[in-house]
Image (cartoon, rainbow, N blue to C red; front, top):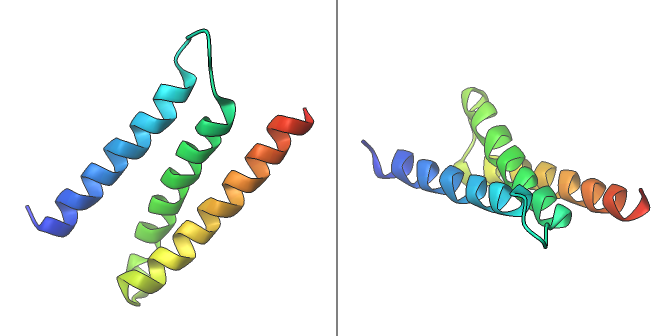
Length: 82
């Protein structure tokens, strides 16, 4: 297994942990943290979706995690408005 692949799997595991940790039924659930976990997963997904298009990992990361940041911002706004 390449190091890059191992790092990606570790990132996805960490992001999943953030998402699940915020959603598990405890006295103090954190929906905003769930939006962060989901946004990080969206960023990782977009980064990998753009791989066939080419470009550097840095460029794809900036695009992917920017999309994730938009997801997080919209999610947090919706959480506080609703």
